[in-house]
Figure 1 (cartoon, rainbow, N blue to C red):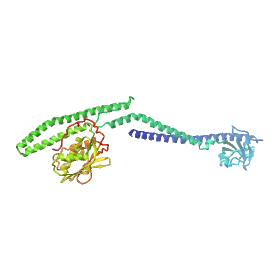
Figure 2: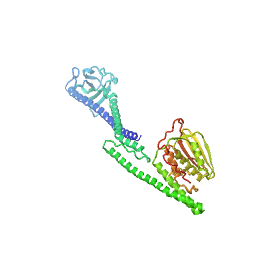
Figure 3: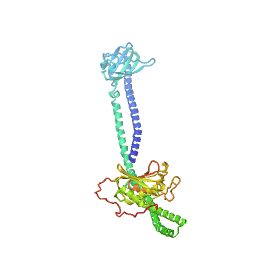
Length: 472
């Protein structure tokens, strides 16, 4: 689409500019050609009229006037408008024209056509370019010597314009095709580079751009892009390894510290010990979230198993046990999706934990099918999320403490993790309209035949351990 847009713009710009120049040139050339052709005809007739005056200055004609310089139409007309001499073509015909020179002038130009004259020698559809020269000292007395030249049909018919403008249109069409084809050939490697970059995502930087064999600037661009992708992949891989390694290294000491604090709490009930244990739980949750983010960023394959979304919601609610707020449900049976059970369970756990933390008196979960989508809505009656911050809550380490004051233990990673998992399953997670907090998970429904097997992509054993509840 990008390449076609540039090709179209460049073609339109080129054709427009070239078309204006071309048609302006055709107009000028055609106008100048017609004017020059008529001037040449007038010059030919004027030369014959001058020679005719020289002849009648000496004597009168005793017969038809002979042709002069291939000019066949010749007449001598006296002051009374009578034809006193003519060539064989105009013998017996009335004057070609009644045009007379202005006072002080001796030459007159005119153009007559067959439909405007009764001359038998000028049939309808034929036009003559007439030049008259006044001679006051001829053998006939004061007379007008007229010479006329037949005007070619091309000068008075539209065929010349049709030919010129038709040729210009054809040339313009060829120019448009050549521009479209040429620009397409030039932009084709660039378009392939663009499509290649479009397929590259932050989750998979291993792809590279095909380097064209043209050995020109476009090939150098592809090489530069590949070098940049290589450096970017190395940087991202180092970052992911650091997060993953740090999370793994921190899990053991944090677990040991939590066990010691729990043992200490069993021997003595002390607020400081309780606060330290709560901090240890929170630190453990943050490490678990970081490890999960590292796994999601690495984009491992998602298992493709059939999951009853209503049953999964019910299992997660039962597994959570006693919570701060009661949870009610409205579950439509038979809403089936495909995906990774543990990860989808993690999404539901995060959404339920979020609603339990911010709700006032209750939490309600709805599972329904809407067309081709399966939808899970988790609603609480808390303060809700302001419209201007409904995307901000999905940014990592974002906590809206100013409006959601109960958040004393969240890490700011629960909702970002939930959205990343939803996206990995081809779904979405968004904040809905309405009072309270409304989080809506949408996934594609699986409407295939359940008798068909459940092929899995990735590790058939599950690929990774359950990372547990992020809010212990």
